[in-house]
Image (cartoon, rainbow, N blue to C red):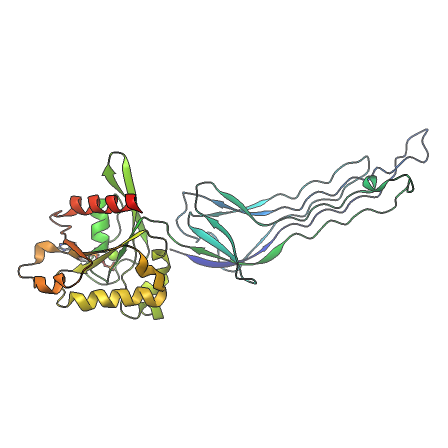
Length: 324
Ligand SMILES: Nc1nc2c(ncn2[C@@H]2O[C@H](COP(=O)(O)OP(=O)(O)OP(=O)(O)O)[C@@H](O)[C@H]2O)c(=O)[nH]1
Ligand SMILES: [Mg+2]
């Protein structure tokens, strides 16, 4: 299952209590203070993991709790720190504090670790409170409470290029011929139910990533069909490839409808570079070129089946990515 949103409750560990204690040795009946500090509470840490591609391991409204630090003890012994709890997340995960709405963390590089809730520090033992006027301090600090809160985890797939189109436009087919990704392909709408990522090699050891997302339909931004759940993934793409079936009788309206869907969701999506591609070139005999020429973003026709135009398309994407 592809999960790209979840809410969790996180509680870091409390610090351990500082200790009140006095040295007692054979010939020193009234020794000085020797109470140690409490240990630190465990942190809750998010860690990016390139083997993960969804948030499904972090179940909805799950509670994560780190252990408390233990109390300090006599002979100046510091308490044990509570163990840190690691939450493994895929690259592209954004973590928000639900009370404030603030972004707490965004994990976009490999093996990144960010403390989401800090464990409370341990209280100081009475050994720290000895002074010239107070030789026998009978107090120590309590440990501090660990941070806690409700957080939402949202995954926005990181890909250079996003494929945008209505169902059946040929998005998954294109990704499958350009990369090793194997999304399901079929002759019916909404074949693709979750985003797929592929790596497209451009030669010279260069490559870019391409994301295939489920098809949009008009009204996707208001929650129709499947597409709206996935519009968030487009936010992170650097270039958008719009795919329209060459058999479409009114590509101009189709293109406008796709753009509407995107801008209804987030206006700034249309500020990204857009390449409009006509798909399924091998099935077309007569095309009303005038319809296409009146769309300035129209770039070229391809056929995934006969592999026509693919090299040129990849080169153009590579060229544009270099300039961004
Ligand atoms: N003849 C021909 N058929 C194609 C081409 N590209 C895709 N198709 C066919 O079009 C149909 C839909 O292709 P998909 O790649 O599944 O379309 P999609 O855009 O991913 O569709 P959804 O996942 O439903 O949004 C399949 O039957 C493909 O075989 C092409 O270049 N030529
Ligand atoms: Mg598909």
